[in-house]
Length: 78
Image (tube, rainbow, N blue to C red; front, side):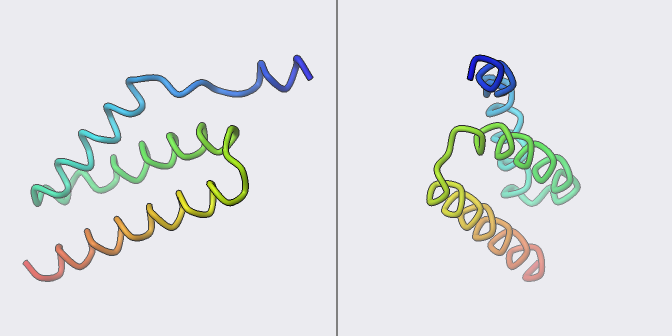
Protein backbone atom coordinates (compact mmCIF):
# COMPACT_ATOMS: atom_id res chain seq x y z
CA UNK A 1 0.00 0.00 0.00
CA UNK A 2 2.83 2.40 0.82
CA UNK A 3 4.41 1.71 -2.57
CA UNK A 4 1.18 2.68 -4.32
CA UNK A 5 0.99 5.98 -2.46
CA UNK A 6 4.53 6.88 -3.46
CA UNK A 7 3.77 6.20 -7.13
CA UNK A 8 0.97 8.78 -7.21
CA UNK A 9 2.28 11.96 -8.77
CA UNK A 10 1.17 15.07 -6.97
CA UNK A 11 -0.54 17.84 -8.86
CA UNK A 12 1.72 20.85 -8.64
CA UNK A 13 0.54 24.44 -8.86
CA UNK A 14 2.74 24.79 -11.94
CA UNK A 15 0.70 22.10 -13.70
CA UNK A 16 -2.51 24.00 -13.11
CA UNK A 17 -0.93 27.33 -14.06
CA UNK A 18 0.48 26.00 -17.36
CA UNK A 19 -2.86 24.44 -18.29
CA UNK A 20 -4.78 27.60 -17.40
CA UNK A 21 -2.34 29.81 -19.30
CA UNK A 22 -2.61 27.66 -22.42
CA UNK A 23 -6.41 27.64 -22.13
CA UNK A 24 -6.54 31.43 -21.88
CA UNK A 25 -4.28 31.78 -24.92
CA UNK A 26 -6.46 29.42 -26.96
CA UNK A 27 -9.67 31.20 -25.93
CA UNK A 28 -8.07 34.51 -26.95
CA UNK A 29 -7.70 33.11 -30.44
CA UNK A 30 -4.05 32.09 -30.30
CA UNK A 31 -4.63 28.65 -31.74
CA UNK A 32 -0.91 27.90 -31.92
CA UNK A 33 -1.14 27.17 -28.18
CA UNK A 34 -3.61 24.31 -28.71
CA UNK A 35 -0.81 21.73 -28.55
CA UNK A 36 0.31 23.16 -25.20
CA UNK A 37 -3.26 23.02 -23.89
CA UNK A 38 -3.71 19.39 -24.90
CA UNK A 39 -0.32 18.36 -23.53
CA UNK A 40 -0.67 20.22 -20.22
CA UNK A 41 -4.32 19.25 -19.83
CA UNK A 42 -3.48 15.62 -20.46
CA UNK A 43 -0.68 15.68 -17.91
CA UNK A 44 -2.95 17.30 -15.35
CA UNK A 45 -5.72 14.79 -16.06
CA UNK A 46 -3.31 11.84 -15.81
CA UNK A 47 -2.06 13.01 -12.44
CA UNK A 48 -5.56 13.71 -11.16
CA UNK A 49 -6.96 10.42 -12.42
CA UNK A 50 -4.96 8.50 -9.84
CA UNK A 51 -7.13 10.08 -7.14
CA UNK A 52 -10.45 10.10 -8.99
CA UNK A 53 -13.25 7.60 -8.77
CA UNK A 54 -14.60 6.19 -12.03
CA UNK A 55 -17.46 8.69 -12.11
CA UNK A 56 -15.16 11.66 -11.50
CA UNK A 57 -12.80 10.47 -14.22
CA UNK A 58 -15.63 10.12 -16.74
CA UNK A 59 -16.96 13.59 -15.89
CA UNK A 60 -13.52 15.17 -16.19
CA UNK A 61 -12.95 13.59 -19.61
CA UNK A 62 -16.41 14.79 -20.68
CA UNK A 63 -15.58 18.32 -19.51
CA UNK A 64 -12.32 18.23 -21.46
CA UNK A 65 -14.24 17.07 -24.55
CA UNK A 66 -16.73 19.94 -24.18
CA UNK A 67 -13.88 22.45 -23.99
CA UNK A 68 -12.27 20.93 -27.08
CA UNK A 69 -15.56 21.14 -29.00
CA UNK A 70 -16.02 24.80 -28.04
CA UNK A 71 -12.46 25.65 -29.08
CA UNK A 72 -12.80 23.85 -32.41
CA UNK A 73 -16.15 25.50 -33.07
CA UNK A 74 -14.70 28.89 -32.27
CA UNK A 75 -11.69 28.30 -34.51
CA UNK A 76 -13.85 27.27 -37.47
CA UNK A 77 -16.04 30.39 -37.15
CA UNK A 78 -13.07 32.71 -37.60
